[in-house]
Length: 294
Image (cartoon, rainbow, N blue to C red; front, side, top):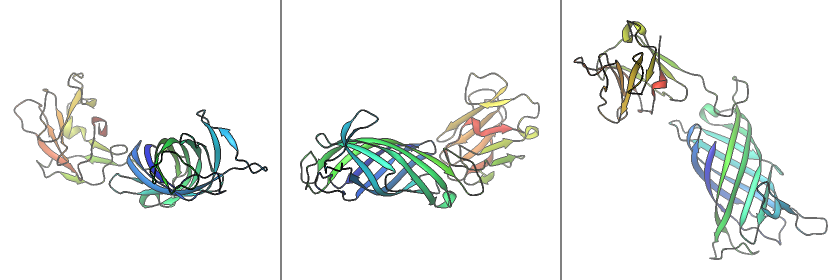
């Protein structure tokens, strides 16, 4: 998953071995759709036996004081109807950060452990690879640096979060959510707005299978395409917010995004009227690739 993040953190300090807790919130897009999340962590400055802080260079070339994670707990939620969440936890040393206290810039990388979740992620295990970089923007006291003794900082970061999730009973390692593919076979046409209601249809996984004897009796079509200039062997697919209409003389699948209604226009721009055959509950976004012939 990839996301932009903003955060609130307590100040870094040269004078204490352990910083106060840092609270972060993030939101953005991922390969599974929109996500948001929140977490809290605590990092400590690394010191040499002499008592001086450890300086290091981050993978992006940033030079500064090195910090190590003391503890971290976070929850990331998929905003895809169910709002299921993944919980991950970081243990001491799992993340490393380099912070340039003079400029407020920082770079952090590491790996946390997935410890279950809610809904489809219940019992999930695996790892989360994290890379993020950012900059302290302003302190609560109005200054722009992070001197010892200030009372909190605001900043922003961007990064990449890769979730390697294993779900119980599924097995294997997944870089996205493991989910069975559902196929909904349509072997009859019932009439406008009276078609079968299909709940929890997900574009990334599910498909609607059109019976050839009903939708393609002559075998003319081998695929379904949104391309108006596609070959005659392609049934046309049209999606519109309201009242989609056929644009060619080819048989056409019409999807109304406002209602989730799907209809079939057998002769396209010909005289026959389109007939409804299904309704997708919640009106999710779909594409021509969600249809196939049987």
